[in-house]
Amino acid sequence: MSDTPINPLKQHGAFSWNELMTTDMQGAKSFYQKMFNWQVEGVESDMPYMMAKIGEQDAAGFMPIPPEAEGMPAIWGGYVTVDDVDASAKQAIELGGKVLLEARDIPKVGRFCVISDPQGATLSLITYLNP
Image (cartoon, rainbow, N blue to C red; front, side, top):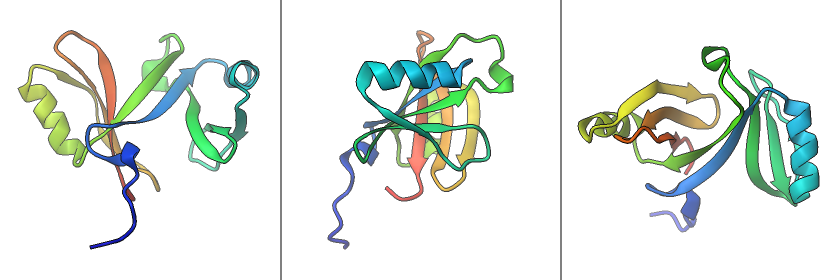
């Protein structure tokens, strides 16, 4: 058994990440830097992505609205950590929810999907590579 403590945000059921999908990355960067004193910087990724930080602590991510969601307004989305994203997506369906975006990998991060509950509220589920 490892003596390394588990990050409480990366335990099953914990909200662990927030991400903005936006039509204006630079406008969002300017607004949130001024609003919350975040430091916002681009990160190496397969797509445009910026990371907001409070000091050295990651706070949130910013990304452009993806082509499959074109026309959608800018929106903040939350991620909840799960032990197995594929099993949790199946469970969401069994409980009356829907899978809106099938599970897919985020290189060097983990695997995620987007679900909706029976009332239509959306949420992203994520299983991290290194919890």
